[in-house]
Image (cartoon, rainbow, N blue to C red):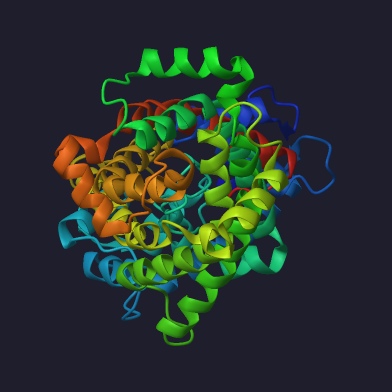
Amino acid sequence: MDPLEKLFRYLDHNDDGTLDILELQESLQDMRIIDFPEKGQKILTTGDINKDGKLDFEEFMQYLKDHEKKMKLAFKSLDKNNDGVIEASEIVQSLQTLGLTISEQQAELILQSIDTDGTMTVDWNEWRDYFLFNPVTDIEEIIRFWKHSTGIDIGDSLTIPDEFTEEEKKSGQWWRQLLAGGIAGAVSRTSTAPLDRLKVMMQVHGSKSGKMNIYDGFRQMVKEGGIRSLWRGNGTNVLKIAPETAVKFWSYEQYKKLLTVEGQKIGIFDRFISGSLAGATAQTIIYPMEVIKTRLAVGKTGQYYGIFDCAKKILKHEGVGAFYKGYIPNLLGIVPYAGIDLAVYELLKSYWLDNYAKDSVNPGVIVLLGCGIVSSTCGQLASYPLALVKTRMQAQAMIEGTKQMNMVGLFRRIISKEGIPGLYRGITPNFMKVLPAVGISYVVYENMKQTLRVTQK
């Protein structure tokens, strides 16, 4: 009996001549394939030519034939010296061209999970057997396990933009992913808006009310404007997602082209520079909305009757320049936030690969989200004083009632009156919103990807 026919019969638990999703998932679980539910579904979706929800023997053979072609291309792309085997140094070299730096020791761990004969190299047979039921078909997809995803929105505007493959750009998957991320961000920001407004209130009123805590802050806001006032300014925060994402994505692509040689993959440093410049470009364009959001959040009931009324009153009483108050500290905050966020993420990724990459290079959702939360938190810690000064500058015309101060003057004033802790006023509610924001954003993002039919790599 042909080996593939024998394999088909092994997978066909009820001997009806077809494979359904349950049989595929049970078989992949028995084979200890990582993420077997997702992989089983992808195999069925890819191979089911007549769309009857099952794979017959012909469809199964066609799937394996097509999949083997892709696996062969992936194998050849890794086998740099064309000697028929993949070595640790070739994995290091291949991943480096895609912006992922790993040590030779980490590459050996990856090889060990595929190598069956103990030679510390992987030949074509070992490669084919390992990836036979793994829909990962090229080396770039392995990298995408570790992509610092921006589908997760925690309400910050300083993150490095998302990256998409050429295939995703051509197929239109990129805009579906951005749309899914935008909707997830809107839901996430709306869900955590009360904590965001409390953060802004504590940042702005810190000099007047040094004893404002979380409980008192919420009580004052509800007493002044009712429960609905907890969402004041959220409309602007949600509205700016679309233009900011669009500008950031477009400018990121342009900066990448300027900084890299044609056909070459972008490295970590170039990605950081491109991302920071893209963030600065997006912030320059949408910054007036940031000012309006702060004014609405700090304003009292009846002071403004919505976004346009707020914009009209700022323009009438303070002029166009008011829409860019706090712009410099905001711009300066991009570099420490994005730099530390990316550096910590790379450090955590490297630690996981060193200590836990035994059976797969795929870390799983929990590890990726954990790395993202920790790296983002570190970035916020580094840039928070600049964010606080930015917010004070945006609001001081309506709150301070005294001479308008520049960035340096405000820093001096805060340190002299409130000390170093004054630069971190409001950071507690800011951190409190991270976990729920990430959780809500991730759940909505995954559901929206299914709704919008975003294909999984």
